[in-house]
Length: 290
Figure 1 (cartoon, rainbow, N blue to C red):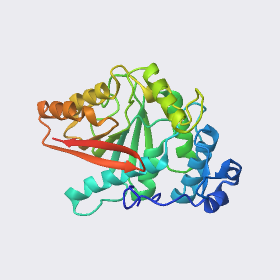
Figure 2: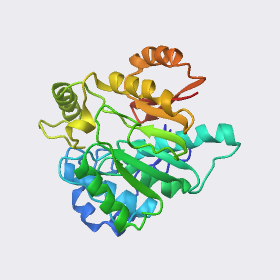
Figure 3: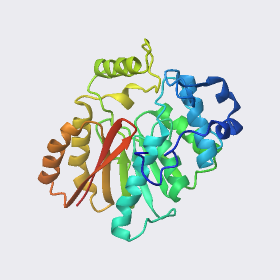
Figure 4: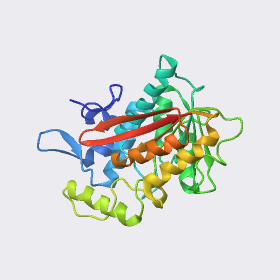
């Protein structure tokens, strides 16, 4: 039984024959697993990148997608779940899921992969503003936008101050239905590396390379995700009239009580924690509004 969101396109097994038609190179990276199904070597960064490219082409109409070496290559099914969960969140207040470019979404830390805007625009027609502190990442994301002729739906803004979340990138006339964020989860490079080693061990490999990549600002920051999300909560008070729902992924369930307490301190009126699961991996998002 699939644990993905009911609208997630990736609830079943990957249809590799269909994926080969849009990305023939992927075929050389697939193999039969012990149960007789085709899969890829998820320990191989090139294989993971090609799988993403094939999925984006076949399922979302993205004709071009590429990222620099060692930048975060996100697993698409889990990212799609976040988008669908946010659509449900908006549906609670609208009666139905609002679609179209009038629904504006702020992506905090859009990254070189630009994945959330691509998925949200393809699934619901939403328009996005993506922000990032990394100019190289923004340049790559802009190339993806331009090559897919999405400049009318996705725009990018550079965040010049690493500790600012909304300031400098949210303009006085902006109105957003929601903001989303995939925060840096780790508090140090060492912690990120330890997690990476556990992942490799789970894949039955010995390696020091990250199969999903990731730059320092994508993976860790001082204080880790609890510090980053706490800063976001504190700063969100100033923008409560411009952003209807604020949200962030939360990797560790154990930090939710601290986040809830902070949301009480800033007088958030509505707080929701939405559980998500992809196979054996469990995750969640926290959303709040004033």
